[in-house]
Image 1 (tube, rainbow, N blue to C red):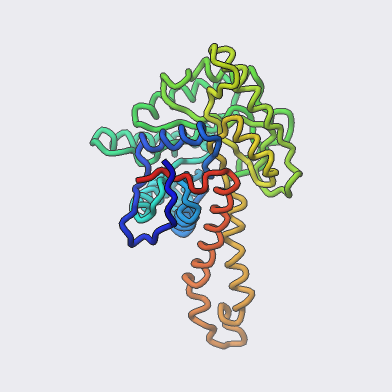
Image 2: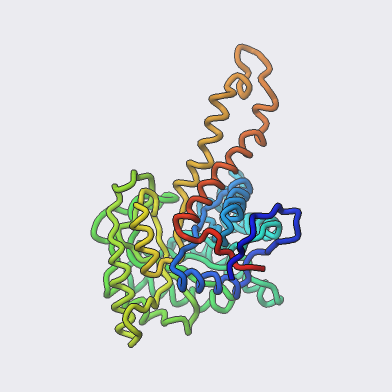
Length: 359
């Protein structure tokens, strides 16, 4: 059922908490059945998290908010620099503030390589397991294991172990099969043929992880994706790679032609053409990560504020400046609005606008 009412202010009595495991599953199922995808927005602070919530609400779209290892470390403070502390702080903040918005929000952790599993994903799964044991919902609704830097067999072996732990804690696991080029959070990959997931990769994945009976998982398959800043048309995507993977596994499982056994994730989407995005969604992409574009959308209004009010934010020639101009709230409000507008645009592009689940 689609909610066709306008966005309501938080003080009105139309609110929703962070998505339960059941609601998250329904979100993903609806996206796949209706060929749309959710923007997954990286956040690093309470300000960017508020911007994400506002953007989803204004687009009348449910959505996914995610925290990378670097974002979590930053959120804990430059003195603490602890990933788990920062991730938990942002998640707890989200659980409180999201209740004031009329959309469902799932919390996710982004790229976690092998050397950070013990310091990030595994402790967070343990925290959620402890919550579930007490009859509560997990703190995060999904976690990503990024095994793109290790051989596929090792990648899937670790994924099997993590999937078992995640399923017990009512959490969905995301894995990466293939390599996303470019750089994110200090992890860099070359732009070469490894950017394209092969049919054999898809088959090995389903053989190792099953089709849901061992726990639900999302697959970040790669089809030329690149992290970073690129002008439209400069990223050489091949969305047909996604269809090939779905087809080869559907045939292996004896499913009807055109079936989409995998729940797919689109990484490195900056610079992608809209038609490429829509084609990828038609092949089973239900989640698209967005970070680079929203970072700029958050920062641009701040830069404009500083240039326009340079003599207020700086004590030029010994003057006193203007407290109203250098009060962080004055420019962070503008940053929140700028980022929220970019998220609403992403919802429109991914066709999730106006599709939030009714309360």
